[in-house]
Length: 286
Image (cartoon, rainbow, N blue to C red; front, side):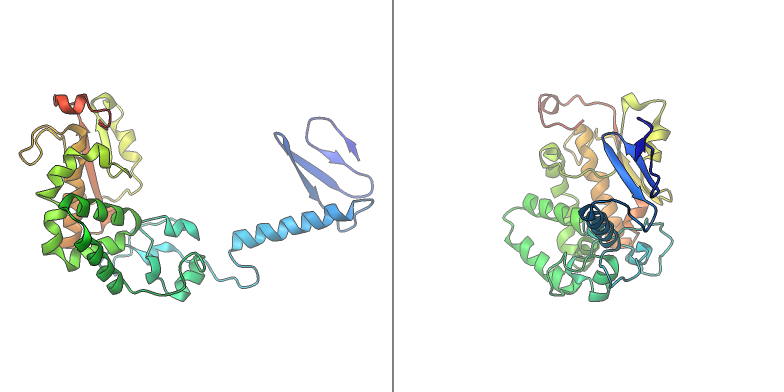
């Protein structure tokens, strides 16, 4: 073959061969079934690479099942609510998304269709049993703050289970999710911070707040709860760490009124703080 230089195109008189250059990587495209003077090992490698690519993209070679639009797996407590637009996901991305993950409650059909078969332990544990397991974990926690941390972790990985647990044990968990425990959680929010929830709008964002609002992934928000953190449950100014209040309050909206959690938006208006303990805390998030 004769190369034309750095343009990324190669021509051959015996067979049509084209290349596409992507930086240091050159992708070879063989466009004929007749390979003249081509190393057989190279041909086998190309065919193997194509098969592996197809296998990975499909999820299971030879036993394909159609991908499922995840709008059918809404986190809404009211299962008739299918208006939420959810992008299609597949495989491990479902297990990593707390809005869509059902854990071991997924049926065999769901696991195969969604590409998570083999990514979960083989047993099937209903959501009722999962709730029992969560309550046993909570009963072993020595303090209310430890219980709060456990519930936040559960919400971060399996939101369906979190709200089912909250709905079934609302009287027991309300003092953990909200007052009085949330006050202590706000005081330690910077230290406990793991996964962002809600929108943070600061005093420096003046002039482009609309751009920040557009970053929220759900457009049809129905419930907004916001705080400026200046007065948290009689604890005074907690600054940006007051986010625990709108997060906890909106969780109760879902647990009590069955509002779809993805329609809820917690917001913190961070206009600064005069709390010297926060200003001197290297873990302060505001």
